[in-house]
Amino acid sequence: MGGMIKTLAASLRENKKPALLTLIIIMGEVFFEVLIPFYTADMVNMIKAGAPLSDVTALGGKLALMAVLSLLCGAMAARTCSDASTGFARNLREDMFVRVQSFAFENIDRFSSASLVTRMTTDVTNVQMAFMMIIRTAVRAPLMFLFAIIMAFIMGGKLALTFVVVVPVMVGGLLFIAKHAMPAFRSVFRKYDKLNESIEENVRAMRVVKGFAREDYEKKKFGAAADSICKDFTKAERIVAMNSPIMQLCMYFNMVFIFTVGSRLVISSRGTVIDVGQISAMMTYGVQVLMSLMMLSFIYVMVTISAESAKRISEVLTEEPSLVSPENAVETVKDGSVDFTDVSFKYSADAEQYALSDIDLHIPSGATVGILGGTGSSKSTLVQLIARLYDVTEGSVKVGGVDVREYDTDALRNAVSMVLQKNLLFSGTIAENLRWGNENATDEELIEACKLAQADDFIKTFPEGYETHIEQGGTNVSGGQKQRLCIARALLKKPKILILDDSTSAVDTKTDALIRTGFKTYIPETTKIIIAQRVASVMDADMILIMDNGKIVDRGTHDELLKRSEIYREIYEQQTNGGEDHA
View 1 (cartoon, rainbow, N blue to C red):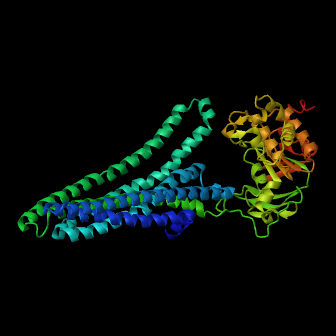
View 2: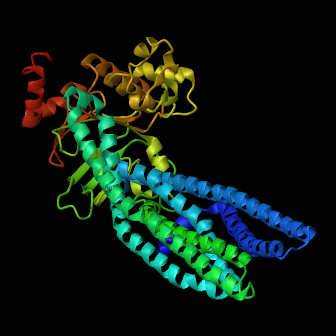
View 3: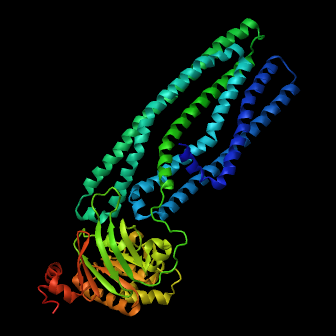
């Protein structure tokens, strides 16, 4: 718990001052609030005793001044508290986002995207609310309770014994409520992740859902998740709702006791032991005591709820990136040569099987390498090691003659461009998306890269050309157009190594051939690694790798593999009708 609080407190930063100021101002507000009933009782007694109007007016002025000061303190505390809590929440979200940006794929694999979204939204909001209550109500309520009890005994004497009965009943009831409501609140957060995951998955796969007419199924699945959360919240809220009747019971008991016993004391002692003013003050102090306990119960519930949220936020903030740049890291990639030496890899230390085994491979700078293999043969895993998206389990991967673990990660990844089959476009214009590859690229460079990627022609058909707005995820362009824009974006980096991971699967063979021809003229010194399902996409490569079950089972040129590789020959003949189409 201490470590978690320390982790979260690091995000306070510039908000420490308004948080501390809130605590000080709250003390002033409480001080004036507990004095008001004291002086009100004096005023009631003065009026009853027939005191001069000037004395009553003077005391009334003091009461008005204290009321105004209490109001000002409350308003100032509300402002400083709001500044501190919202600023704290902003810093938490920013720190979490920055931390996630530093994660390697291995770290990302430990958190689902839906869970990360929940942690940055719902969980941060819960922690923000708890923090706001802690710096304001959690100080105000105990102080108000303590001061009100003290003043009640000073003003009411034996009459204050009512609190000996009321307070234990109130505290016992609140503890019972908190104990039984908390388990339901805790279970909700785990279910929030599943609900958000269902929403995210459904939105991303909307076309698939509609294509298979599965809307009703998705509605039922979402409804079940929502109903489960509703059930837990309803259970918790029903228990928490008992706060009100317990509060009412204690308050009315307090009123009846004070009026009954107090009236008898006033009459029997003729005002010498206790007077009407003291009864009035006791009523006010009674409300303050009970309201303070009620606020403390709310704080307890909120803090308990937020403790689970704080734990989930802390997990993200304390997650150490598995891949970091070493000290004195190499900042420059000499060339695009790639060397795999005795490489084996598995995604986690606990995994039983290796995703890659016994990989030995040398790719000279500027070479074009094709990779073929069935689904699950670890083609993508192989190329992800080049950009150090994962670290090898055994052996080494070198780029430009230097082990990738010795490079500054930004320098290495700036030298390696990867175009994935499902590469994403971001909301914004086409030009803005392209400049992800090079933020300083000129319009002429954008056009040149798009011509090489065979994207310029279709961009010109849009009314706004390169200023055409792209929807989030690129949903307003076709799959082939999206892939060509992603290739153009990668070309703008002018990388030492260009990796195409099945990234021309959505374009026709003619366009695919034109793109590969453009590579030869535009980036002849760049090492090009092409993962493909079509033999035609790699048959002109300097070397073709055949992968199966995480191993390179054969390698060579197109002609060499046709002669000796049964797998390659079978793929080639299936795609070319026995070679006749190619001929």
